[in-house]
Image (cartoon, rainbow, N blue to C red; front, side, top):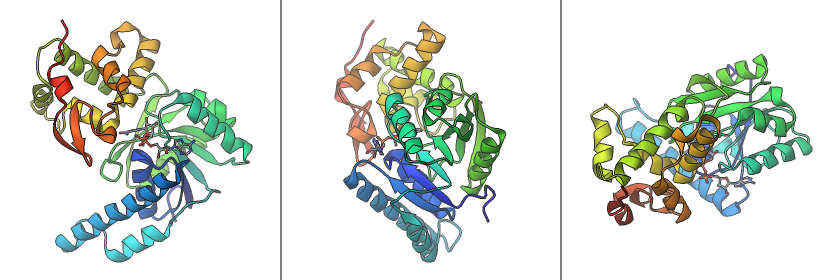
Length: 301
Ligand SMILES: NC(=O)c1ccc[n+]([C@@H]2O[C@H](COP(=O)([O-])OP(=O)(O)OC[C@H]3O[C@@H](n4cnc5c(N)ncnc54)[C@H](O)[C@@H]3O)[C@@H](O)[C@H]2O)c1
């Protein structure tokens, strides 16, 4: 029996984040249902989960059972994955567009879904999304980190009307998934992105002002003990998501949070980071192969 008492979990949007969330849910023993508008993405998503589980099986064999999972656990996880609806809790992980997330929440309610619903949003107001669902007491934020199977922390955010019961179930679900909960209030950027997004924005300004190169900006943070620099992390997260949160912070907290022009230009040009093959870095299969030459010469001021 799981600590949360939940059995079946749905994941809507099986992209970068939904993929990892579904894998961790299935691995943790939940019957897991995945949904996406794009059938080819759905197929690719399931395939990518299967390959990720294969890597865990290899790690298990190589470490003599100390790391990873064995072949039987992999097969069990794969068997727990399916692609239809009716769940105890649904995790929405579609792109960071408020109207799209609101539409999905309204649609779920129209279809008669009335159990717990959480959003993996990086910065949209949880209270706003809960209102669209129409049952705000059963709604809250569950902000997983990328890559989900590796990152332990999950930021959990209550909307104004989230009930104590929903909150307690989501805390228990974090434990069931082997994650550590980090509680934050429903204010612009919550806790993690309130700190991280201005850090990235300032790193971009350091490049724009000719203070340091992309390479050196990321190296600076190794001096702070970080494993990955802000620009590479931003490329992983997606520059569209970074820009969106900057705009939320600027709107709620003022001009100090204004997005830097270079961040805007990259998003306008469709260079969104690892997922599109270029951002601050050039990417091949989610591995950075060098600095984007357009950025290397970009200077203002
Ligand atoms: N990428 C990150 O590092 C990261 C980290 C934390 C949180 N998030 C948040 O997670 C959410 C998803 O981000 P992502 O990076 O996984 O995006 P993504 O673009 O990789 O994946 C989104 C998926 O949603 C699907 N989708 C679009 N419209 C849909 C609909 N109407 N119904 C069902 N599926 C639909 C797309 O086909 C795609 O597969 C966003 O809210 C983002 O802010 C992202």
